[in-house]
Length: 174
Ligand SMILES: [Zn+2]
Image 1 (spheres, rainbow, N blue to C red):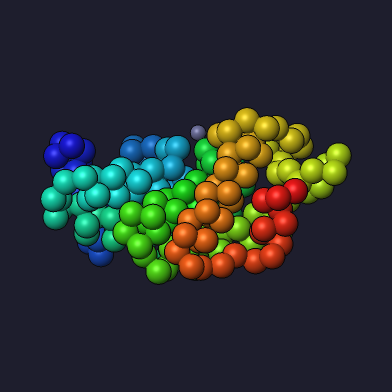
Image 2: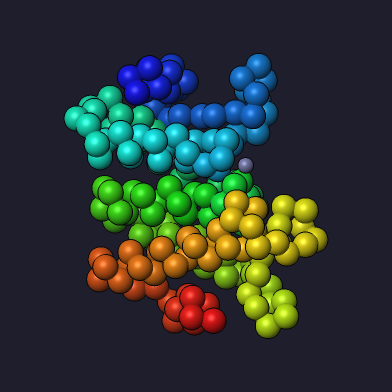
């Protein structure tokens, strides 16, 4: 684990932010914030490290990742793999493990965005997959992963005496 923490420390820039690019050779290429290939996945690792061990090096890196995600409002797809849901998963961990108040606000924003991007197909709320044409049900690329995020958010909000919109609850019980 120390090797991973050291490696993440090396990609930290001057203001402490952490950037993960599609290619290390060409850092002008797209910043990746999803958890599949990007910084929110590294953030989930850091949260796990901080919650398990006394790990003071992890905290500033986690703060850097939070700032990178917050300051780079990328136009992402919807899903778990490369979409806004993956950022939502990072914030769910932040809320669950670190009890971060900012996480609850960000989760609400992400759910609203997902609701805006949803479609009704055959009477069911669904999201277009990355091809922007089809609906799929798989976890990483499709609707079940998005539903899973929304259901976990509802559960966590209720256990922290927070609330989500009526529209979110309707969707969960649909
Ligand atoms: Zn992926």
